[in-house]
Image 1 (cartoon, rainbow, N blue to C red):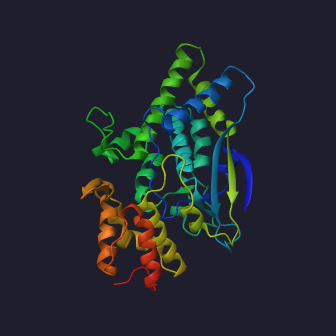
Image 2: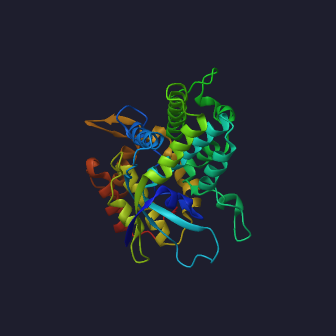
Image 3: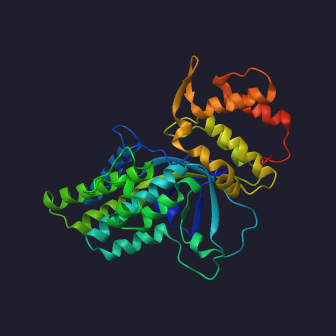
Length: 340
C-alpha cells in the first residue's frame, strides 16, 4: 500500500480511467446547506479569489482516495484504476469540470473548453481496446453511468431535454425528481455562474479571468492523498471496513459488497450480475424506510431478514442484518452467487 499527496491536475490529468466497481454505493453527495457540495464550493471559491486577488495560494487538502489496478494491463492501453474509496470525490470533481465547461461554452471561451475536455476525456488512440468506453476518464457504476455521461457530454439546454422528467417547463430543476448527480451538477453550474457575475460586475474582471481562476484554483489548489493498493491487498474487504465521508455504509451497502465480493472470487461477471439480477434492488422502493412491528428500516433490510429466516428457520437480529446475511452465505458456501 502506497500513499502520496497530489494536486488534482495530476490525479485527473493522466491517461487513465477511474472505474467505480458495481458494489459501490450510488452518488450521494448533497447540495443542502452545510452538506458536501456547498462546503466544496466554499473552498473552491476561496481558491479562485486568492488567484484573482494575487494572494499566495495555499493548497486545500480534500481527503483521500484508495484504488487498485488490475494486474498485467497491456502496455500503452488506458490504465484502469478501480476506486475502492473516494468515488464520491472523483465523481464530484468530474462534475466540477463539467460545470466549468458549461460556463465556458456559455461565454464562448473555447480555450477553457479544450482544457477541461482533456481532464474529462482520454485522447483517442490506436491502443484503445474499447474506444467508446475508454474515452471517458471516469466510468461510473451501471446505476449512475447514463446520467453521468449525459451531464458531461451535453450542454445544459440539451440535458434538460435528455432528462426532461427532472425539469420544469421553464427549465428549473425539480429537486424531488432529479438524481443526486443532476442536483450536484446544477448546483455547481449556478454557483460558478453567480461567481463569474460577481467578479465581472463588481470587481471588474473579465469572464475569462474569473473562470480561469476557478479552474486554476480547482486543479492546482485542491490536493488529494492517493493510496494505491498492492496486489495482495483485498480491495473489497477494505471497502467493507470503510465509512464514506458523507454517509456511513448502510446494511444494504455491506450486503451488496458481500455479494459482489463472492462473485468476483468465483470468477463471475459482476457487470452482468448487476444488470441481470441486482439492478432492480437499487430502486428507491427498496431504500424507503418502512415499519414492520417495532422496527422501521429500509424495505430491503426487511426483505433480507425474511429471506434468511425462511432459509434457515432461525430468528435473526434485524438490527444486524448484514452480519446475519454474511453468516448465512458463509455457512451455505454457495458455489456461485447466481444459484437457482
